[in-house]
Image 1 (tube, helix red, strand yellow):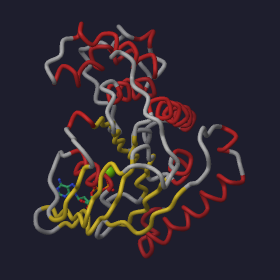
Image 2: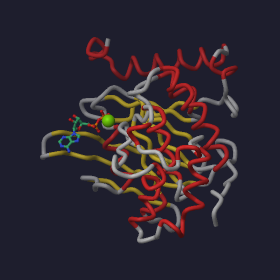
Image 3: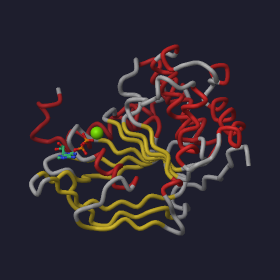
Length: 269
Ligand SMILES: Nc1ncnc2c1ncn2[C@@H]1O[C@H](COP(=O)(O)OP(=O)(O)O)[C@@H](O)[C@H]1O
Ligand SMILES: [Mg+2]
C-alpha cells in the first residue's frame, strides 16, 4: 500500500470508540499531581482538543496515551488490537535530524521498525506531497522555514498511516499567518485520511476552529473541568473563521476556560 488509506468519519455520536481513559491520575515524585481522576472517551474520527493553562496536565495526558509512561492509578483501554505503531506524535519543536534530508527525516518511523528507505520511498513521497513539500524531498532542515519544518514533522507523523495522531502545541511557536495556514491544511489532511486527532493547545481560537470536541482542563491539580462540542460542519475554512457561529463558540469556550482558571486568572493575563 502506497496511498494513505481513507477512513470515513461518521457524525459525532455515531463514532466507534477508540479508547477510554478511566480515572487516570499521574503523580510525579510522590508530590506533584499532574493529573487527577481524568476520564475521557475518544472515538474514531474525533478531532479533540485539550485546552487549558500551562501546568494543567495536557502533555502528561498525551504522554500517557502515547504509552511513553504509565499512569499512577487508573487505566487506558483501547478498543480492539492496538500497538504503538498506531500512533503518530507531533511536538511543539519539529525535532528534525539536521544531518538528514527531509525525506530521510520522514523515513524515521519506518527505520525504527527496520524498514529500508527504498521499500517505503513511495509512501514518503506521498506524505510529503500531502503537506505540500514534494519539491523539498532532498532539502536539509536548515533550508526550511519554521512552518515548513513543522510540515515535515507532520508528514513524519502521518506517513505510517496511524489511527491516532497526538499533537502537543505544534503551532505555538509559529506566527499567526503560518499558524492559520497550517490549521487549514491540518483539517484538509485529517478529512482526507479520516484519522483521529488529539490536539493540545492553549488557544481558544485554534481549538474552536479545529475541533469537534474540546476538553477544558485546569491546573493544581491538573484535571478535566468541562467538555464542549463544536457542532459546526467540516470542511471549515475562512468563511467559518469569520462567521458569527465561530465567534459564538469562541465566547462559550473562553468563558469555560475563564471558569477553569478561576482564582489563578491573573497568572495568565
Ligand atoms: N517528569 C516530570 N516530573 C515532575 N513533574 C512533572 C513532570 N512532567 C510534568 N510535571 C508537572 O506536572 C504538571 C503538569 O505538567 P504538564 O503535563 O507538562 O502540563 P501542560 O502540558 O498542561 O503544561 C506540572 O506541574 C508539571 O510541572
Ligand atoms: Mg505541555
